Length: 237
Figure: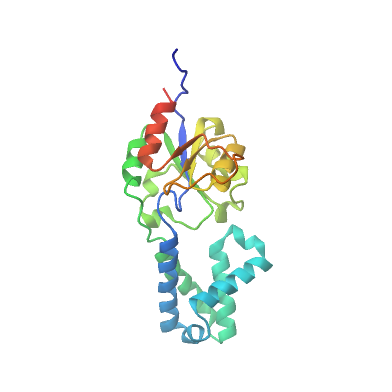
């Protein structure tokens, strides 16, 4: 019996952090670079706070103002402003501090499979991204590989809300059912995209167990962009 296969999707849309590159070590390094900048340019802040106490203050601020979850960069900026004011430093320096942080935050190193995988997709499908984070594809140097990108801080809505996925489809000029979303988070990425009408592939690079109790079932599970290309070939004519 011949199995019926779908036509190739018109678009593949990616999550960024922890899907195309690891983010935790980058954030840790960026915080160390920021604190070194504070020691030199805002010493009273560095004397009164540590990386850990600044982080704790941000978490307390987020608990009081959960809307900051939409833009963690804005949360970090607000936390620094409060710390500068408390330490008696010139809060006008905060934007310089944020520039330092964002430069380090975008110094990501894509997984080895990412660039070859994006090149293999080029010309076969449209490529987009949807992120809740502050990654800047132009700064990272990958923007030329993407036809459309949507970030929660700019759009004003975060994953798993279906509308942010649908916005990416609108920008790519494809229907959600004609697009595949790829991300590492079962709830934010897989469930969110499926509720938007897209098929969703779980990028499970580290072999995690599906801990949703069967509540979330991805349309596919892969460990790399090579695996994604193999899945696309298996599932589509």
